[in-house]
Length: 240
Ligand code: PXP
Image (cartoon, rainbow, N blue to C red; front, side):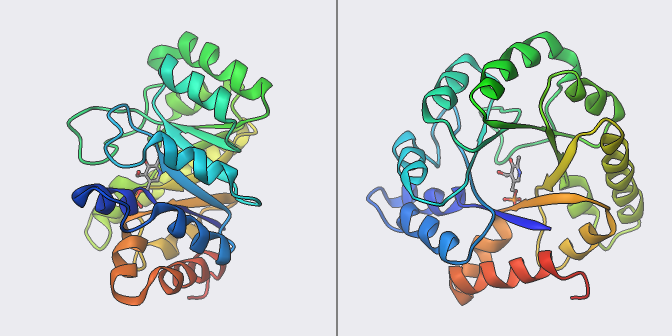
């Protein structure tokens, strides 16, 4: 499995003090040195962590694949069409949430999802929808023309090591297999860490994992390069 590193948390730390430390672009360059598959950032409506200037600067880095997470709004669609990131992941967004809670309800707003996706695909931007492991949502995404889903692994991550783990894991696995029947490619992410990520290898054909919080947390102790390398190795090797 490939690794996409979410560097929003570097911006969160930077914004706590204002100024430019720690520098988001330096984090992006370290991701590049580690040869991660993509650098993921979530440009929120309130710009609470990553800012427009950050994504613009990351987009300009040569040989870096930018995966822009964003809400399904007109404003974000316009930004994506102008910026032309390599990929966008469409996520639900609530102002008060600490992090993305739950997947997007694509089925409940299918017409808008189709309309939203079309110009992005026409610009060769790879579109993915961040959804819960739910057959109705997967079937809905298959109608939008988006080639990818990203499965929300938050429930599995929270349940890891408890009685609930197996059910949450089987939900993810079942959803991934169901999505593959529609020809959808499957990414996953949210809450994955150095302890729970290994089970993702049990899900056939997962393409990419997007991981942020645990990597940036570990980077505080071992440095970002080391933290990324350790996670990359866990993603690449099922035996670890
Ligand atoms: N994927 C998506 C769509 C997300 O919104 C997030 C959180 O921003 C992640 C992956 C990464 O989650 P975490 O920071 O818990 O690893």
